[in-house]
Image (cartoon, rainbow, N blue to C red; front, side):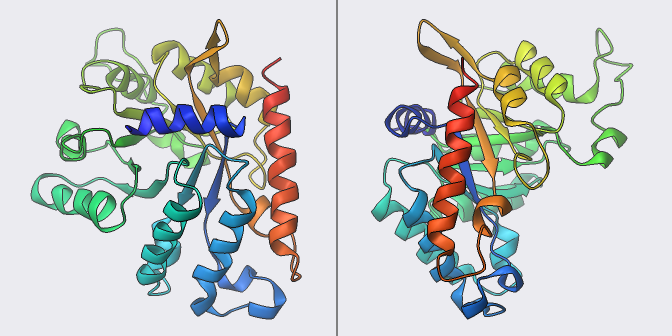
Length: 279
């Protein structure tokens, strides 16, 4: 199955638009294992087990593993997710942005070493930074488009005077992802939940690509506004899918031994809020 096939199947099977981001910070772990980087796998695996039937994807952030020399634990976690939730696609949040042979190595890392179904990329260096990943047919690649951080305005919200129509940079990226760069239907876009109007604009320009939308939960994004702006459905079938990511609000819902049960409760509530917003 391709990434898009898996995403569509997980959305239907789990009745969900929710993605759980796996950003393990040992200093925020439950009290019993707080500060122990050797427990990253155990913590994340427990979260996966508790939420696997509530999500349309998981999104491990590679920096949270690499910073603690826990790449081996990430490999184990990827294998665990494959065993317990083979129908749920995994997006490796790496935000790679290099070109040529270096990009080829990053693609090997994402798709062969870790076995991810999709990866996040920075398109700043242009088509050359995206093409190596698309050689992996069936895999997905999400391009940073309109991110939720305030500094995103520095580049993403600037006009491109040399491009026809003088679009904002994020608008130009959305058009490229919907059109000439999307050779095999593999591309998606990252758009922050804190900018619902921009989500709606991106959806206008890219009506069918999946949108990965971080920022719901701890970052304050409005779940209902996010769904209204980004999801597109025709005759009961999703034509413009969204992947609404929540990390900290779910991962650190409790400091006690009940952390996995608490994570499930928050994930369930978030999933229901998103589903209700479909109307």
